[in-house]
Image 1 (cartoon, rainbow, N blue to C red):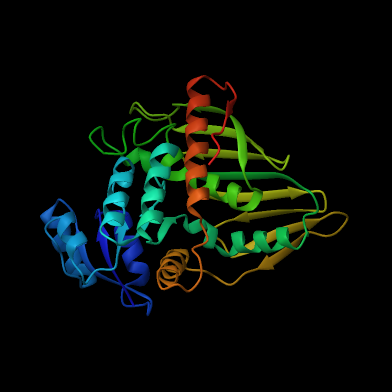
Image 2: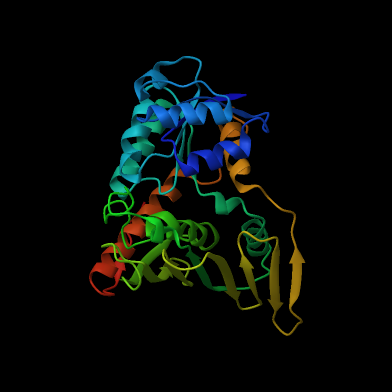
Length: 328
């Protein structure tokens, strides 16, 4: 059983804890830390954990094996490197960091310390994403031509000016870091390296000084193309569609069905077994810490996703000027 501590307590820390606490025989959350005493007390009471008065206390506790980091994006590098220096395994929520340079530094710190690093891209664990991977590996799509994604939600409509997400550092190109990074990772996992992007970001509905509508076209090293749309002031949508020379497939990545249209055949609905993606990613992290296989999002892929996010932000700031993606 991996003994873990949750760091940075809010909505998402509760979502992760709710997926595993008292349900998993691989990972248990034994303590927590937030600068807010009230948040520490509430989390400890809700999930029957201990609590520590500082991050340093967590890192020095020999009864804690790993940390689950859900702090603001700009703090991830520091918190990951501190954990690695203390010999703690690290599960860090996406986005990994805000720059490829800081992501590489954090990943190298974990590698040097010999600790497991996992970035929380839970959509890779969805039933639809796993079927897409099987179809690609089996050649069912023929030649991969295009991957089309959209991840949108009305989350930014609840931000206030003093919310940590309501600034351009934490939320580049609007919903890119909170929402779009999910689909950047899916494009990477299904289509491989992204080499260039052309992107636009606009503010259409929000009164805050952040964009709420972002679109990006990707060039992939394979020769295929990709597309990301992400709106942080629109109804919830999470879709991934794949187009190939032999078949197309369409899915909401949170649903348990994929529609497959083969060339010259009838459209087929394939039912899938549901997957609790949060539990699945945390348990795969625990297995990796125990030496039972690798976590499926590699550090290089996590850093590459951040490089793509940076290139999208840069292209949008230049009103669609194409940008090369820095190599991982």
